[in-house]
Image (cartoon, one colour):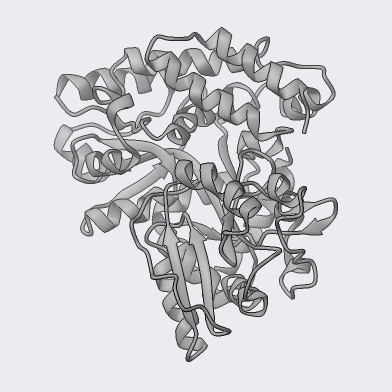
Length: 420
């Protein structure tokens, strides 16, 4: 982990002005030519505007794209690459945390080396590290994201409640919200990638607050998940559930349904990445939503937030239209493309000097980044995607009473030790 480098990056970005949604948007894929580009994306509600702008800037070009949820996408993309049926351009996550991540796809040669692109040398170190494999850049990361509690201000006003400022306040907030018939947070863990977000928001403070070098110790074999404050983060996640912080049946609630709950005020908010704000506004254009840290202790000065490079785009090493694919990724990484993306997503651009003005809903995230009070998304620094997959399925099993935190953390340790 490297909090100082990431915070320094965003200090520049904000001074100048980080797996995921589900959408049915699909364009036909027949009749490809030198002016046809195929694209697979997980950027719900964001990629459409970028595609339109790219096509407008390149008359005659036809971008034929599909969008899907992160779970579905990650299950399918490697198979498509191996079988030669993958699109020219595809969503790729930074680091090594899931089946669609940079290291995982670059190692077997599925991704085109983008090191010579004009933007690659401009990537700040904190982003470059997780965009590369063996010193070569494979992913165009266009945005930075953070995880925290996103509150619906209208719902808070109606309930007569204010965002909690400490861990004790959080539990009281959940009890009070439940008593009023409006649960505090929507939780849609039918989509298993969503299970990690509350845990990451809690682990940022409980794990990395007392031990900023925890990741380095894990890599050196000097620490484990099962014998560390990860047990505290897990316990607090369960406490939140028992305190009624979430709506009934989170396991039966999809990510899409959880957005509806938070957007329409049937919950007071949702614990998610900042990208959800744009989705909530799409469902409730007049709503006011704000991202804040999720309290994990009774000392606010100790709060940290997870924040890191978000998903970007890579080029299929066997792309049928390689030149147009490179042109598209260059457009995404240009000030115009990058600002289009982060404006729609409610994020922050990965490069400085784009002329971007952050949305007011991200004020606290920007402050935490500028103050060096953030940690990378935990999975980005894990040695293989198995660790995250074990955690995600394990969390679902905890919610269904089929497993325990101790068993899940021990299983994560076993996968971690297998290396890359």
